[in-house]
Length: 184
Length: 320
Image (cartoon, rainbow over all chains, first blue to last red; front, side):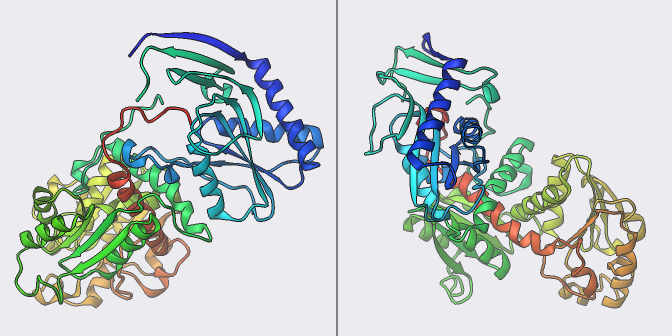
């Protein structure tokens, strides 16, 4: 394990503000929240989706359905990685004709998002799919971009972005780690 | 990711090869995969390009179909190879059949055989992952796993469950696999059979043995009935099916004596009126069709864990 230097980039208040802003952007762009379905991509997209749905409800006054999505079965790298543990997938309602907002912590290669879109289309035909991420760290390998970004973070491939969330990690923060070696 | 994964499976031959952690990984994976059966499109692309061969040296339509559906829901290609009407009936040896499948490049072989040990032997000849779908009187691991899965879904736990396994234990690979699996997860097992159908070394089996059905079903959470194999009757293991039904079968009166919330299970196919009365088979706490549905999810889990990757993984985490 190489030694890693840490830089804390976002703190709990920054995360809260970013989610709040994304919620406002979504409401503005969709003219309300009535047709939105917020889907968190496991693992750390799920608490973010729950928070985003709560922020939307706070702004618009009506509950917004949210669910969780495990994209493992749709990954393009399973044959290289070995079988990963599977999580639950739960769409809260019929998504036909609604706008599905995919939520993830870090946008990197875009491959997870491609898998998430494929998984979404297997359960219905949404009117639109939007992408909201807490951090966009660049280095896309696919023609995918986020509609809503908490923070754009230029990185090198030798760096790792770690998002910590209260529900999973006990605190909210975004940390940039320097690694001397490029991870495989 | 901080959770340490259990050792990677390369074959599924016997419950004896599994750790408690591997059993719970299989059940948890099945839990995630079960949801696919409720979708309008019951298919995921996970095993696209992989080939699964069902090699059935002995007839078993139900198990074969269950494996076939499981593989197809994961987008694997499925080849069915049964002994009847194939090269096997022309005298090809089991080894030559295995080498043929190896040469065709199949990724997994689901094997059912009348010979105990055939699946293990197969692992020495082929590179493919081997899944035992029943070998002689030896093992039927996916049946035991789907039974555990069904119990866990219905009753919310496995540890401490009281389970009575009733019937022809002597000839039953289901009983052997199931009692071992139950012991592994900390359930309490009672084995009940006619004295003529108790295994000779029943004392080394997990749990206690009794021939008294009414004693066995006292306070159980799960009453698990084994199929009476009618062909055994000719060898005088018990006098008549009527007598079997009276002494070891479950009728409404015995069903009523089960405690609230207890379930009745059967691996199928059932002999209604012998080990299970017709109305008992259709009772709300008989979960026999659940077992069939769950069997697909559990077999998908086994195929996914055996085939859903190349080399064992060192870093399952990483950001997207």
